[in-house]
Structures are given as C-alpha cells and as structure tokens.
Length: 246
Image (tube, rainbow, N blue to C red; front, side, top):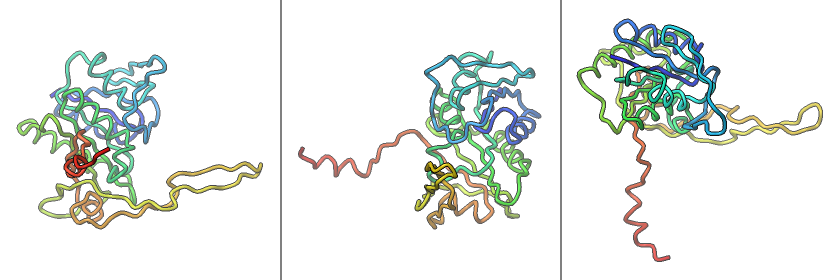
C-alpha cells in the first residue's frame, strides 16, 4: 500500500518517526508533516501566504503550514501516486472528547477523508511514559486488517492508545466521543512589569464518566477506537425546530 503519514507535532517528532518506521516495513510510506509543532491547529488551511515545501529525502517532506495543508499538498501535488490510506500521528498526548475539535492530528485525518482517502488518527496518552512502539505496532496491525476490510468512505477512525495497554485477549474498545467538563480553564496573572497575561488549559480538566466513551476505555488501559464523520447535523433537534414560527 502507498500510505501518507502526517502529524501536528512536527516532522522531527518521535511519534511520527516511530509510526513511519513501523508502517514502512510492509508498505511504501510518504511522510509530509509541518516543519514545526502545530498542535491545536484544528482544521485550518493557510490562505494568506504561499507554502514552502522542503524535500528531506527518502519520501519525507516538511511544510511550513498546518496539518491539513500537509495532507492537501501531499495528495494534490507532492505525491506521485494517490495514497491508499492516510495516517496521522502518533500524537504526543491523547486526543479524546472535545479535544477532537481542536486537534491538528485529527484534522489531518479529516482532510484525508474529505479528499476521499480512508484516514486514521493515532494518539498516545503520555501520563507515565512516552514509548510509542506499542501504539505503532497496533497501527500496523490495524493497517493490515484494513487492507482486506476497507474503512467506509465517509468515516475516519480516531485511535487513542494508553501508555500502559491492558493485558487482555482484546486490547481495544469501540467507543464514542467523550465529554470534558470545563471550569477555571483560563488563568489570569500579572507580570512583574504590571501587565496582565492569560494561560489557557492550565488546570486539569474533568471528564464525564460515560462507560462507552474514549476516556473510560483509555483510563481502563484499553485502546480506544472512535468512528468519526463530518456531518455535524443534530438530527434529534430537526423535528423541534420545524415547529418554530418566526
């Protein structure tokens, strides 16, 4: 298979190099990633200035843009062939619940899905360590499975791997997107020079206890596989809204 790999931690991040090395054992891998960290870039595209692409050799390219830029450029310009699969990650830290909306890792996979390529996003929880090999091994196992069991065209898979995977016959759970509980996420302080400054996300954020959620699975030591799609329509509200008379 021809596989495109990107991320939001940058071309030199350990997660993407570990993933590319493992997947490259059995597939032809192209790596096209941001030239620096672009975490929380979400699904932004660069429209205000031309993008610079640097050929690093061995089918590795860096782009001075966002993760979504990298996927778009790779599929429409850089790669000599259309990829069979897009992988994003392995992200340095989990991407679960509401983090999905901000994640550049997940957004790279979204861009692949938008362009008609089956896409997977991989993230590693890093509370107690940063060994990416187990996550890369699971990615390789999943890629091998997908060769004969294609992902539906309108869906991407968001995979989160705990830093200590449970020793069980089945190490993963099919989950749904969890929910974070936000309070006091912005901290205001005053600098020595007298000006105010703010820090976003400095406090630990609580999560809901839904047993079918990605949070619950990863906390229990299971790999979380959450199917995502781009249709944001709240279908359960349509009937109610149709009763409105404005």
